[in-house]
Image (cartoon, rainbow, N blue to C red; front, side, top):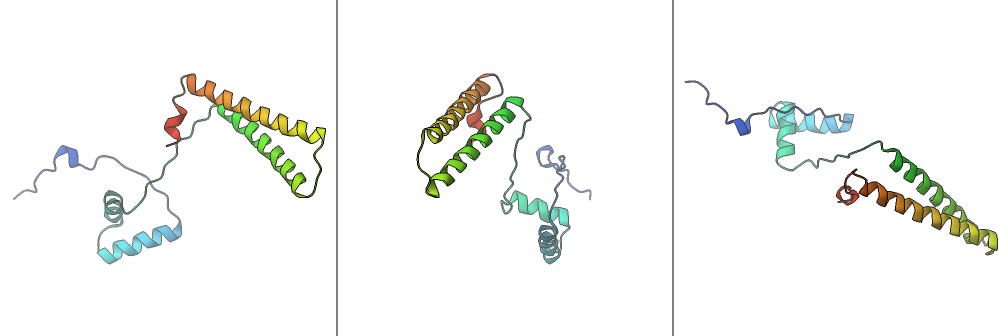
Length: 130
C-alpha cells in the first residue's frame, strides 16, 4: 500500500539556514543521538514544540537613523564626562552648565529627528519597540 499523501498545509516547503556555536551544535547533536532521530528532525521538533526561543532582528540602513545614533552617542559621551567630573568633586561653573544644556539640546533634536523619520513613511517606530 502506498504512503498516504501529506496535506498541502503540512508539507515541509520552507528551508531555514541556522548557524550555531560548537557548544550549541553539540547539545542538539547529543539530544538527536539520544532520541535516535536525524539532527534536522530534532531541530524541527525543538522549534515547533516551543523549546527553542527564536530571536530575530530587523535592521535597516537608513541615513537619518545613523545620524540620530551618532548624535545620541556624542550626547551620552558628553553627559558621562560631565557626570564623572561632578562625581570626582568638580564644581559647577558656567562652562559646565553650557555643556549640559548643549547635550540636552542634542537629545531633543535627536528626538524630533526620530519623530520626522517615523512620519516620513519608514513605518511606525513603535512597531519595532514591542
